[in-house]
Picture 1 (cartoon, rainbow, N blue to C red):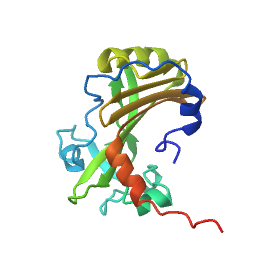
Picture 2: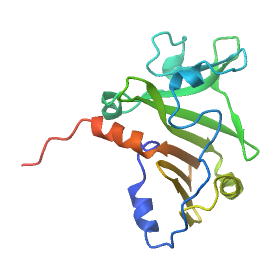
Picture 3: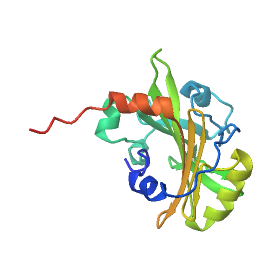
Length: 198
């Protein structure tokens, strides 16, 4: 859940920081774009031993239960699917295919949800790097995406229309989130609501 929901405590702490202008550059990353159909990534040209695997795929290969593709119950109820591109070592072993970002091998996950028209669309991309790469990758993304809306030593946030990018660092490493705010709201609207308190 923590890799999907915006960290409210972090945003609250940063509310007093001076805000910069919104970016006018497309917020794009890796081999996919937010808002694109999941099948565009599924059938994109990939190495022969690489394959997109999603948690809801009916034909997942053996060992897929260990790939961390499950999503929390509320998100599963909203129709969210979690995917990643995996490499097959030819011996039944699967590992996430790393993609270079700022010169650093980076793991990527793709979150998809069915839109109003019935198409599965990528609404969030999550990336992970070792924590020592925060400054290097932040500089790379600022050059690529433009000035951030907010910047702190441990958190950077970009905004361009309905596209939002976030980057944070903690003891577990560097996490990068890129998501479509409209599709994110669609997910939240479909999540089961808690029972009202008496």
